[in-house]
Amino acid sequence: MTVAFSGFLACLLFVEPRQEVKLVFAPRAGSSVAKQADFSIAFRSITTEVDGNSRDDISLSPLRLHTSVSFTDTYAKLAEGRPQDFLRNFTKLIGTLEAPKMPMEIGGFDALSGSAVRFVWSERAQSFERRLERGKARGLRLEELVEDMDLRAFLPAKALKVGSEWTARGRGVMDALFGAIESGLAAVPAEHEKEAEMHKFFLRPFRGLGNEQVEFSCTLAEADSSAPALARIELKQKDSFELDIADAANEYMGSTTDSQLYIERLALEWKVDGKGLLSWNTAENRFEAFDFEAEVEIDVLIEVPYSGPGGIAGSWKVRIHMEGIANWSTKVLP
Image 1: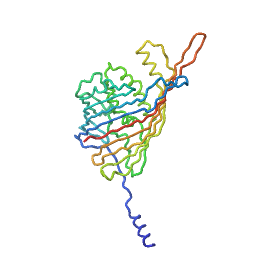
Image 2: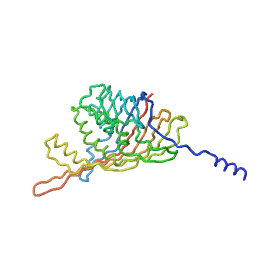
Image 3: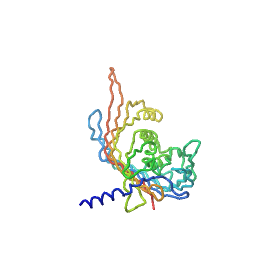
């Protein structure tokens, strides 16, 4: 028994410690990678209250939003840890909204289909310059197109061992989550006013807030034994935050209608609990797949002040509570 234990101890002493892994973005210059990014959010429960009273006559569920963007990135030049010059060819963009008995396409979401945009790094501006190389998308807001669809924002800054943890947050994380949606909404033409305004007054403020508040806990997991060239990053997010867009809503109504209605509060309180997995191709130094699913609760809180004869004053209070599941999936196509 003593001999067996001594032999076991000797083995432990001579086992080589796990090597550190450095995950970097460095695909071969001139290579092309076809990708598809999908996002959906489906609300299984939506309830409405007006001044504390439930309104069963106002039915919004089921409600589902789905977007899908297919594109190919061709990397002409690379810098350390990022592209320097690359061309993005958009092949197909789909955006649908399914409301009760009323499925519809998001107007203008596919405007970039068949177009190509070149991204070139500017040392002077320390950002990417964008130009339309092919296509006829009218009113395209190039500056709003997300560059990092390679999910580089989730990578650790240094080499780590399996089991190591780090935190990912900031603009790059929000780009990873909503970059594909931006690709569709940044090209929505002016005639699709509702879609364009949804982008301006909701998605952009939400992403701006998320830069400061959305945070992911990342863990370097064991490599996939069936695919030894893939490293896996486990992702977890559990957070809550509030977005107040009353000023933006009042600005919108003031510029587009004659209404004197004033919104005192328009807040969206988010609760998110999700987990997922990012697979990184260590042979080609690029991402391979990203899947993330989250339970989502959203409370929309609206307060509108009113006044009447005899000095009567108060406010209408509306609360919409939504519960559902959000799914993100980005993958490299064959």
